[in-house]
Image (cartoon, rainbow, N blue to C red; front, side, top):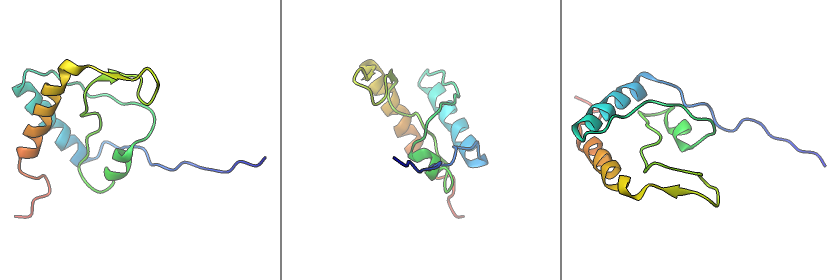
Length: 99
């Protein structure tokens, strides 16, 4: 057996645009009474790729545990606050808006 492969996704970098979006998310979270904390995690997601081209946040979904495993779960009572945060971010002026 011969196995070939390589690294297929770049790491998600702390780009200036990502940091700007993170600061906006933290501020909007405070408006909702959320104390958001910045974190890093292993693995890869589509965010690694989109981050190369535009401001990207990963992890806006509902908190839980066991991603992609048989014991995966979400904390249902967090759905409303996470949806509210996403809504507030979507209502903001675009970061890359041409003036």
